[in-house]
Image 1: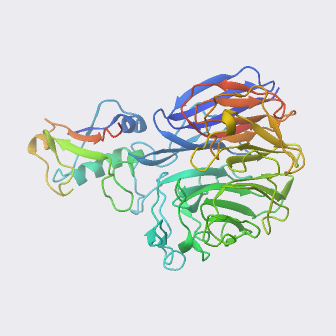
Image 2: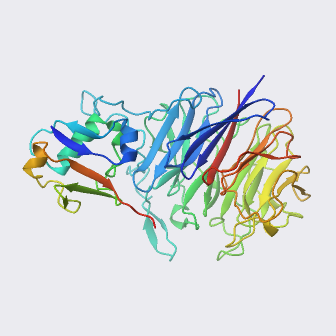
Image 3: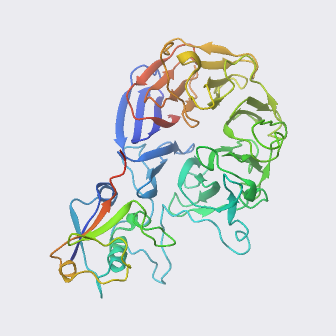
Length: 98
Length: 394
């Protein structure tokens, strides 16, 4: 099971607490995780990536194993520790304000 | 006894204020959708327990919420949790927050760009839903005014939204340019007496009318004059802030333009100014008394850059003559050191006798008058900045 951490507002929308766990078929990539996430929680469609372009929303970032993976190709396989569920795939909302 | 529900959208969530028909004691529920911008909430005229809300965020985009129990509980009216997102034959199922401009080669292909601030053409980009207008007859049908300006509708209670591309596509769309607040379709008025007739107003493109339930549109701007645009009498480019009508007399329209309070007596075919003795003819809101079609309310605001009440006095102005002659209503409103704004969606009237009038401020106050504006009292004083106010009587 892949573990995914959502920002607070998306946890509220999806009505989940803490992490969510997903079965991801095939290679574990950001795109595969997001598709599994949106299938399990359809209310999140459009909130992490644009409906049509599937581009990541500008104020969201993807992290795993202490690395910012936001600018990697969504097809890039994630580290084995994410695929095995030892480390979460983290979707982070930018702290933007000041 | 009747009950009253005031639906308040704010910068950081939604609130529902409820009272009996006396409108003296209020219960405050919320925040709903805490931390999100709630641009607008509105209930179905035929089912007051069916309420729609536009929930939006610069981080997470647009969400549509729906309540079937008067706001006690809410749901996103698309595919439910755990349900497949495709039909058995592989087609995408409902996505309640999906607003995609029409790019069909027959209806949408020419609608690719509008004018940008520097005069160049700029792609249409969906940002948010500004206004939700439920059908007068069908609780599952709703019109949505969005930024960048376009009209969408749903016929399945908000599960799916489709653009009515005739508004953007009637011919003037490429000339539309955003105002300071964006290029938003913020006002949608439905005519109860003339089925199919509706109005839309866009900052800063103008006012438009449809006579076929939103399929085709044309500008109705004769008489509008805006000295701050290249051609002051142009068909397109007027910064309309709000339009209001009385249900019993829908051919009479009142408009708060960027500058000027205007009136039309013929369904927008022509307009004339009725600013009269107002201390400022700038403002955002305008509304009409529920039982007196010639009684109109505005809240003058000082502009261009200040956007607070003249002299620091929060005054509602009422005309009982359909404009031109205005009286200040001040009883219960702050008359010194008041520097809030009242945004375009933030005034509403109820249908009780006497007519209740409500407005919300950027300072978080929601004021109510249970006597048509003669006296005022705050229902709440310290909400987040108020974006929108709607009222239900049931």
